Length: 108
Length: 509
Image (cartoon, rainbow over all chains, first blue to last red; front, top):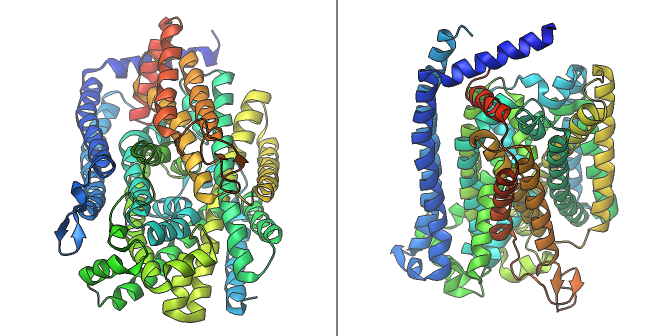
């Protein structure tokens, strides 16, 4: 067997060893549990604005002074985006720790 | 010719050429050329992403659209920003971990077939070219108005500069031009916003109240629905905006310029703050232009409203400020087109030439030479197309680029990372379905066909009634990928490959 071939084989067995390890599976699960609901949430929050403005006029009422609900909802999109950025950064640091643990476990 | 504007434009040209000269000394390898050696910090790349992203369509286009149509213009600002959550949550880190230089690299990390790489490269080139024509057409109109040059001369100047940056300075020069532009644009926009806000006594209520009488739209200016009257059209536009960014090649290749996934993540976060603050300020630009330049004057200068921001600067800050804001717009365009040339050229040189044609056998020197010639080629073709397309609407071309990116690239990027059963046939089917359906639907749309002569490219009834194809073509991109996958045979080695992708996309080895 040539060098290249044996390297590929050992690589692929290493990948599958990591992929099947309990820690890696739990990392995937934790990531999924965070990313999927958050993504569903921000897409829903985002599309609610054009859906409401396209099919109704309820957002045209003034909310605070001369500013209507449509503008407030629009500003809320900015707050939502920044808040979810912060949330992701915090969560990702925990995921980084888990990755570091898997790395040392598998001597990478 | 506007004297001050001329000198400020010249100053920008001089500074960027000095940057390119310094960058050219560092650009000795393909890694330096394509990714600046992967050595940017999170902050630098965050600024560069912002500089790459906030195009003339954002600065000139959104300000004008808000000034003329009120709330509907702000949809663009919201969509362009929320899009970064898709990038951050789903795409940035796996992309950094799996790819080297191009989007095709990342998809080819899982599906090592020439066809996959070829189609992915074709998508990159198509999207970047549409986007580039938009920027060049905008640049031509702007410089023509400011310096009194002809449209052709203006396009040639911008085209020559972008070619020089990329050919000699590669990603180093491109990144620094984008960083400087981001700082200039944020500074200029902030100053303009403060001037507008001061006129309204720093009172948001005063500003909103003034808008109820400032334009011919009267009170309805502040309500949605002035520009987008068909609900499906509004939704289609919003869908393309929020999903398009995560498929835009010139934005995604920026993630290869940093060391690792954690830095890629922090650069998206910095970019999101900068871009968000910028888009909040588009309200001040739009409202200010509506209030102080006036509806008729904005339309008289440019019927698309693209001169609203520079005219506002003249109204509030005099001739010097007008020249300064115009120079900022010029820098904005230069930074974006440089990024676009680099993304299309890397798809040509790295994907088509080095991988498909030379099967990975080309040496470093040969690859560099091809990368530089590909940049020249991409630039020349785009310049020629821009000269032919002078009559096309800038916002229309940008929205087409977003729709293709969301339909042709995003489904395959997501499935490559997250779907176990996904395979080569599905990848090719998804990319082609998304690309072809988006282009065909645009070609049949009201932006291309109108019964009223002069309103669109051809005279006739449109076959497809929506201006933006996203709501049809994006689902088709996903469906194409799913159907292609399910119709082809499941292979045992595919599962092992997916385990590898799962490991590599979560941790760099």
